[in-house]
Amino acid sequence: MTIVEKILALHSNKSSLRPGELVNAKVDLILGNDVTAPVAIKEFRKIGISKVFDKDKVALVPDHFTPNKDIQSAENSLMMRNFAKEMEITNYFEVGRVGIEHCLLPEKGLVAPGEIIIGADSHTCTYGALNAFATGVGSTDIAAAMATGYLWFRVPETIKIIYTGKLREWVSGKDLILYTIGQIGVDGALYKSIEFMGDTIKNLSIDSRMTMANMAIEAGAKCGLFDYDEKTEEYLKNRVTRNYVPVTSDSDAVYEKILKFDVSNLEPQVAFPHLPENTRAVQEAKNIKIDQAVIGSCTNGRMEDLRIAAKLLKGHKVHPDVRCIIFPGTQEIYKNALKEGLIEIFIDAGAAVSTPTCGPCLGGHMGVLAKGERAVSTTNRNFVGRMGHPESEVYLVNPAVATASAIVGYIVHPEEVLK
Image 1: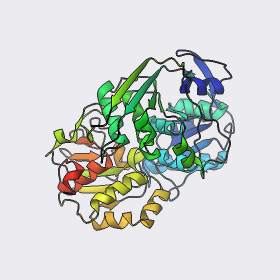
Image 2 (image 1 turned 120 degrees about the vertical axis):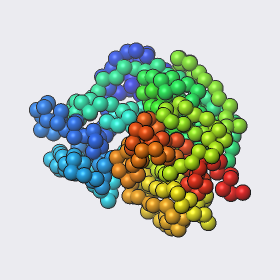
Image 3 (image 1 turned 45 degrees about the vertical axis):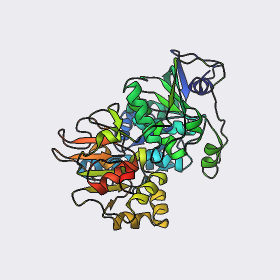
């Protein structure tokens, strides 16, 4: 069996599974945010029970429109807050202690190998970086799972992608996943599990693996999974105290297809508007003028990303025609960036540093684009109107390209800044 088949079999008391089978699987963690949880809470009320199945296995993270940007977002957050109190939910994270959900939950040790995590947010697949089956589901599914502890799944087919070659400087997990989506398309892995494998992946940091797993959904995938290794173990060591069982695919596992990419000559990638699959090498985006640069989000708001941004911004200034907004993924990441002097570098360079929030990624707040404006962003989507006005444009890039572009004023290779 493949990784996803093994995890689903274990959680549904089956000895074996094959793609296409339907199972009712026990879930280990249920996630809701301030956009999706209110819908789930309303549906949960209709079921007519007084308590969630396990108060320790529900996480409520108000991160999309918080700190609240208007009355509606305040009402949504209040509903979550009251529900969390009523249900005595352990893992409710208030403003000031909250973070961007897909940065926060792994950091808090709420995700472990071999587990099933469902979230009413499409980028829940991020946790596949830690060898867990994690996937986004609808709010009504969240309601049912909060009541029962179970959810039905169709067992997905698996695509194995093998990456070989040493990555060049300024090339990261973001470039690997953008390149992959460019090769297979936004529906190239529709309802499939992707296993990211190969020597390149073994040398990739956990932060970069999370970036790749995060954007598996942008290829239509149900989940994106990585093997458990010493890097996974090191990341989990001081975070997860409960027992867990890593899962690996069998040597005779059956895959729908196996793809191989030699990425030794891969350049930093840019996804042009208005799809993540519209990818080209950064040289093909040269001289595209920008108005805003966004560094952060559940895709690239971790310490590795902030360190790259600081390395480029140190001794430089953000271009006077550009707004550069930086979003640490969690309060802990923010604090570590402070300790390392990164925040001072950002502010000295003329960048704005925000409290952790999803805000600009979905055109919610803290960086909405006006008509005709153009942004480079380390976020995960660049659909029409994603970050604001329908006639604005978003170019998806890695943190190095976003930072270099903020300095120069147009999209540029990072090496141009350090000449």
